[in-house]
Length: 411
Image (cartoon, rainbow, N blue to C red; front, side, top):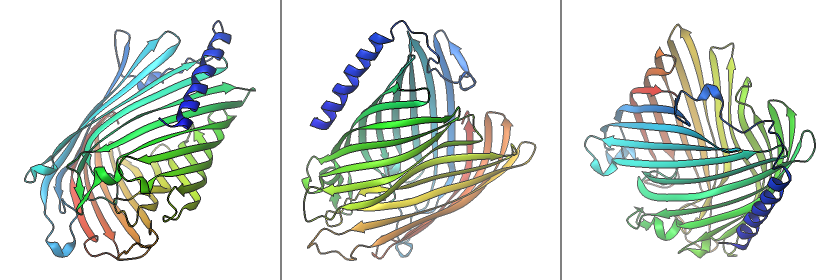
């Protein structure tokens, strides 16, 4: 574990203990519990919300993301995702656990079938002047890690985040944070003849501090400074240190405009001089807005560094967004249109022979669907989505179509 991480968790631990001692007999203004409307059933001391989603019950015309000239393979597929949120009151704190199991099935190509598991835990305690959160999580999945790697591969991810927030003034809060994460690819995970375990297995750790201001009861703004380290198990050429300064806004789920957005600056410095660094903007957001109770606009966006499997172009800057508009037509019927775009801007390692220097690949998707609400929590839909990637490299260009039905409950 890195020195940065050890020191950050040390500060979190002792600051928590000190403030708990000060506020041990204080009365809570808010206990940090769940929104009562989000809890669908109670089993003894547990609050439980089950959810279920059946996606892509239909056809994928390009199962392996192969180039158009390579006769792409088509198959019947579906993805079933049961999930449950569980809340438990523990003294003056709350423990929330979310368990999600994703079952992916292909009729012909059984190598693409998988069962993907994720578990996320959120422990939070609120006192008069103190709010402590600890968030461990675990993911075991057999899927595509992102837009770059087209193979579905097995990997484990696990880690934790911690945060101690103190109310300094009526609307002003100070906090310290710490994080640690491990990414392990299976030894058999290979893409384009490259071992993903050898190239991408890594540990990430970091810590930082933030200043938050509660602008309105439903809106807060914050400035965060953090330092992170990425250390690769078998490929130290990729090791790097980063410093981020980020401004963010968080909007309460009860607000008309809800979600969060952050914009900032990242100083990304590889430890090996043959790899150029990056100094520039970053962004991350997930926002939605409901107009007149019947039209919902949603957008997610991202701009940040991601690591590539290719040792000659070890990282790329990903910039992209996904947007959707959902409209209730009449009664229980609605329709949705969605579109997205992402650019992957690669950086060359000095002196490396590459097929296309500092290339930029483009990924585009668009589609839509129509749905029928059988009940407030149950929706039946039909969806069509087209996707395409363009690149200067032969073999990295492809397109495809997914269409089929969907069923969602409790989403």
